[in-house]
Image 1 (cartoon, rainbow, N blue to C red):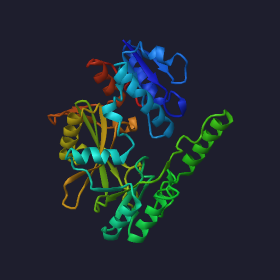
Image 2: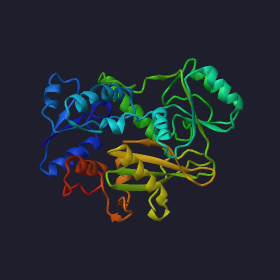
Image 3: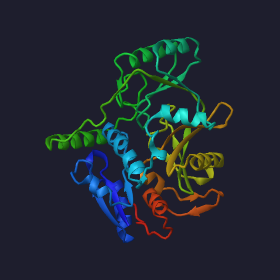
Length: 350
């Protein structure tokens, strides 16, 4: 058995990837590191049993994953994580909306336009407020509340004009001030400086979003969202509290792990979707609609691993509770390898 693992963010083998490696090592399973720019990359891939590439939101990863995964999975017939079924819609809220809406799953009503005049027409009769989102990005950085028709027209003109670079959304009410942290800011500047002096890219989010616009119905009276993460037959759940005096919870950093506060209906819906769509791993963000019914906000196959590990256990699809802390990488490897008796590192950070 040979597992190939591709580089992670900023072309490094960071802590998330190292977790896969440490699990495989303590279980005596061989793994190798891979990087698409190596001349022997494809020769090495052909010898693999499993290929792992945890691609993320940055544009470089999109380019690589969308290029090589179809070849490895479809043509070379090598098992991948994520597989195409799991990730073709990753970091694209429009794809996710079309997919889930057409499969009749409860996703918040969205209004997507690829024509400016059609967007104008909608804005003339829309009920405000609505939520404007770029189709990509995480942590609420590309999400703002649009309160009036005038604001909606401004957004539409920008999206069908100069466009917006991800994580640099210019509209009033963005999270740049709410989420400002001096330590993180200095840390990020230091990291970028080191990459720059080593002649490495510091702008891996560079694509401009334009010629489409996405508005989502606003769901008031939600002080938190509920993140349900399904990996195989396991459901991990926690709540993410909103920022102070704000409607956005993603990226707030305020997490609650009281299992008694998790709505079981969220878990049942998440299991239903993952099974029907054959997702290997998927995080679901749930809110309540005006009538207190569960509705999905968005989904993502990858996520911060410690947030899942900190859950005190998981539910199986029969709603039976299993106590313990589990790294998502461990659960993914158990499913990929078909080995229920894998050992995992116990301590956080190992």
